[in-house]
Amino acid sequence: TPGHTYGSLTYIFPRTKVCCSGFTIPVEDTRASASAVGLPMGAGPKLDFSGYLTTNSGGVDRQIESARHIAALYSDRFEVVLPSRGPPVNLGKYSIADRSQILHDIINEFAELGAIYNEMGII
Image (cartoon, rainbow, N blue to C red; front, side, top):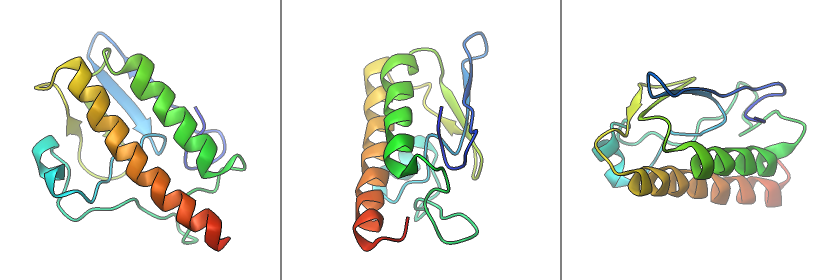
């Protein structure tokens, strides 16, 4: 699953209902409702050490495609997301449909930011 860097992987452990997303699912979120799902308030999509959203040769579009794929097909198999940065995100109290929607909302916000960066030529 292409993510933040080349060779990124996402692991889903259905028995324990855990997704180790690395940087593929950008669970940092800026929405006021972020705290409702355990995300730190005011957190936003993190930049890498060079100031880029992604250093993957496929670019942010490939990362978004991969994250959407995971959210659409596998959100019924995990309740907790362990990102590379930040605290675990517990989605267990939400229905599978709501879990998928929360992840898609986060990914869409990240995609909007990625589009702006693409337009500016800094990705």
